[in-house]
Length: 491
Image (cartoon, rainbow, N blue to C red):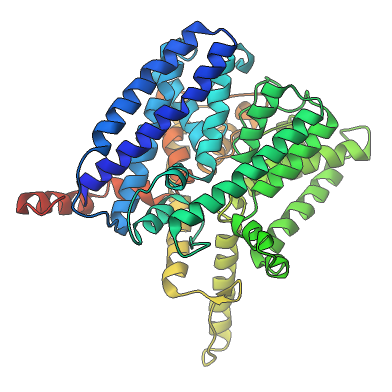
């Protein structure tokens, strides 16, 4: 394990986070929130000082191997979340360190789960920081930094992207990974600006437009009002609905469209399945809630918004869907697990991984019926090698185990099963609101510190797709590091 390189990269990432805190500081100055200025300046100074110190560590090589990429990713997300929560603690607006960490991890992982009982009581600068963490974490912290400054050499950048980006496999849009990162963030930023302009043009206050755009782009869900998005106009709700769905699409599709390869983009198997599930579930739920609301248009608007919010793991709400009929709630729980496309800002198991699992199941059944036949698993017209298929199966197994263990631990708080189960699903799949006590009109403040810590870990596991966090605490990795250190070969 290249310890020096890990410190060097971590330093750069910490320094960038410190610089990014300038935006909430400017907001605090604009709204004359003196206590917030100090609350941000202290961690900002700490981040920049430690960042520059770590970044000055000299390394003999900038090559990043797979294990280094996983460790680097896990460590950076944990460190950034810790320092990112300090402004809430220093300002006294979320004085409890575990609550502040919960809120910040929820922001960076684009979960949107909150322990706040009154969002509107927060200062403007804190509200902006909450939403801004969604935007930073949406495409990936390391990908964001990589788009600005070089982190590694050769295939090292690709190892970092693979360790952080959601989905079963991550490739490059262009030969250089750093250039791919810049292209992704150019598309990401462009879509962000367009949504902001549309919301502001629709009469939404500028500050609200900024925060909700950050929440939509990162598919996070932090709002600035206790009612989430319900208080805004129908026009604004439609704009947010459209962009939630758009940000749940694999960004490689947008790159193909920009390059003029529209037919190739529309042939995407993942895109067709994603849109098919979205429209079919939306129509089914709209029909199921027809007796609750007065008009068909209201049912359609609420259904399409909520399905888009849950499927893309954004977490905004315009209605208390926890009170909807049983079928609708079951379908929403199913959507929590399904999630959005790989290579998007959404969470969940991912459409591509589910397609791969179904194709593998069909392939195995076909082999049982026709043992002499020769066939391969294909996705997006590409042959899937055994390594990718095996990783998808291992991910699903770990997914089920982690959800089961998390529900068991959280159940010690003795709340109802629906609350506990949906809380774990909502945090692990980076959605935010669940059902019952943690539904759209509830929050996570009711849970004990132990349960909150479990849910914090679930958010990190879900956002980083399990493996980086598990490998960070892998005994064999630590053992190898100790052996290399004794031999004097560690960087």
